[in-house]
Length: 129
Image (cartoon, rainbow, N blue to C red; front, top):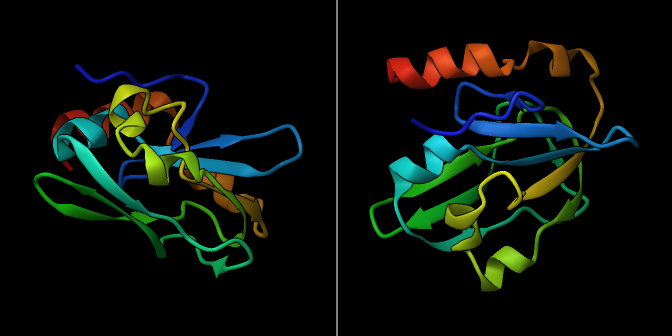
């Protein structure tokens, strides 16, 4: 069974979100998602300064099996990206909850509340949705 930390929020599309103390939201893919993808071999990250809408594809994770779009769980401006993943994309498989992809300065606070808590995400990932 995949690990699902209780301190994060989740999107039905298998991204996790962590709110930093300054309100910035860091985004990665869940343990469930990285297991389904298999060995990650390439990551394409959004540019800092790009504006994204909640649900918008803004990054790509490629594995030996497939390429998957990564969606922003909140609307806002990309303020950081994890450049370490460009050189070492396998970090996503090794530590999916430490290997964040990008950070968003959210513009619509209510979107955070619409994300799934850990229990709801467990139900989604177990049901195969």
